[in-house]
Image 1: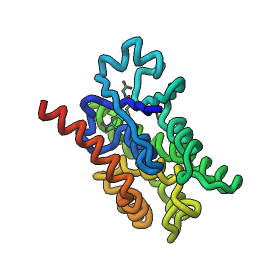
Image 2 (image 1 turned 120 degrees about the horizontal axis):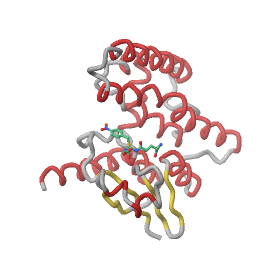
Image 3 (image 1 turned 45 degrees about the horizontal axis):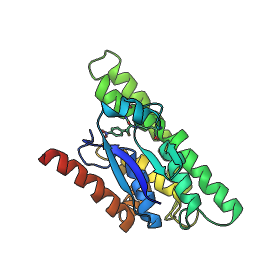
Length: 216
Ligand code: GTB
């Protein structure tokens, strides 16, 4: 059955692969599943056909036969559960890998995402500098803990898993901030993720969408 995901017709990240369809593309590439992409605009994503699949009017979504899913974490988990390669088979190791998926989305991503938002939306507000500093303090706390846990390992818990896939997509959002480089093992971890052939295929595919939109 054909898998169809949704992505921005013209991503505000200008092809840097920071929007959340990137993690779904990457997961599909890791397990070798082909997929189609339905591109949506900021207008069409708030209209009834898209809202029927994604109640908050966001991307990404995932459709396959009778199944329609939203929330990038749930989509990546579904892909990982349906295929081999993104979750260990051992029950305890699998539970730990899923734990890392939640950690990336619940514990590490919120201050990183808020920092980006504040930098776009609150730059002219009187509280801007203080709020930015506070978010960056929180980010550093999270990265220091993550860095200590990763140590010299390649991945967070044994073999590369969906937990690493999500964590790398979250940390990539810090590119250009200088913060990631304060933790050399995390910078190397992100580079290791980005060097995976599946990541490169996913990245090129989303960048081609932006290039086509810019040419048109
Ligand atoms: N929790 C949901 C999930 O994980 O699927 C969140 C989905 C979400 O935030 N989607 C965003 C969206 O559709 C795109 S990815 N926003 C439109 C809207 O809410 O109206 C977030 C994103 C957007 C832009 C950049 N960027 O420009 O760098 C990066 C990430």
